[in-house]
Image (cartoon, rainbow, N blue to C red):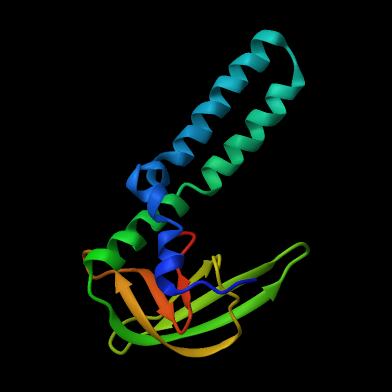
Length: 155
């Protein structure tokens, strides 16, 4: 896998943030699921029902991922990072690895979250990090370690 720069990793998300898709995509999935449920009820056919259930589950499960991408890109462009540390762990799954980070900053509680690397291959360890927080100074919305971007999948 070719390793992307930090800017290139952030740029992967810019089109979805710019056109608003990142914030609204889960609603499109849920809406399409409702339409397919109606089609399944009218036609009494199981295929639209199966697709509706799948899209509904994905829409509900990923309802925070898109808004998190939006907050992360905006924080990168407009906010100021603070220094801290990131501890990355990798848990092997049945079909894919799961990446977890714990962010530590002096005077703040630790923040743990799952992330999906885009354009880089994380390794386990403890790394210096630049951390951007939500507008209210609360939860981290973005962290950058040497060579990689960490965006929480969920709040």
